[in-house]
Amino acid sequence: MILNSFISGLGIGLSLIMAIGAQNTFVFRQGLLGEYVWISILFCTFSDGILIFAGTYGIGALITPYFEKIDSIIFLLTALWVGSYGLLRLHAALFYSNSLAIRNNDNKKLYGVVSALFFMTWLNPHVYLDTVILIGSLSIPFGPENLLPFAIGATLASFIFFSALGLGAVKLSPLFNSPRAWRFVEIFTAAIMFIFCLSFLKLGGWL
Image 1: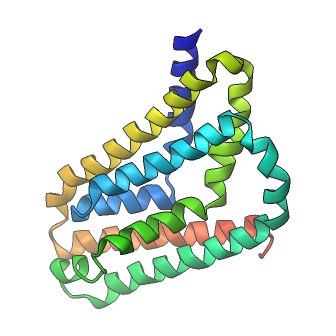
Image 2: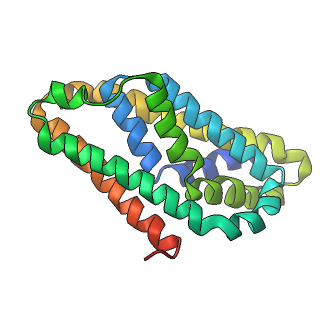
């Protein structure tokens, strides 16, 4: 039963995290840049782990009523931040003339990367819905004695996915040395951010 719980947590974690999202797109972009890749991977994994364990051990039931009271504000703040980041990426694609300039236009300091990941992770309502509430609910049938292997499996799924995403992007980075290819990355990133911006506004009742 312990092994079954671990495998179930791993499978559920992978199925939820593999969808394209703002956080995933950011980690992929950091891999293409070759900047703070492992820090991005570990930050996302550690954050997911905290939320997964919180949901698995019943915190989801406690925070749901409070989350529902302020979810519209959270959705609005997240939409504004994600939309702003999308505008930055679109500006880089349109107004920088070569791939090196486009790649170097960001603030490369560590706190810039970590703060971006913080906003995309901890102010993203979908993260709480998927990890704390949904994974927490799916863990209930396994019983108290199997919660730990379930949570470990789900957290390992996060580590596997983000490692494959970030390190895979590092391998692909030579393909994006041309200005046209990197503009595609920037425009794709901006498009994902704008889609999530509109989605968050709609989910929060602002549209």
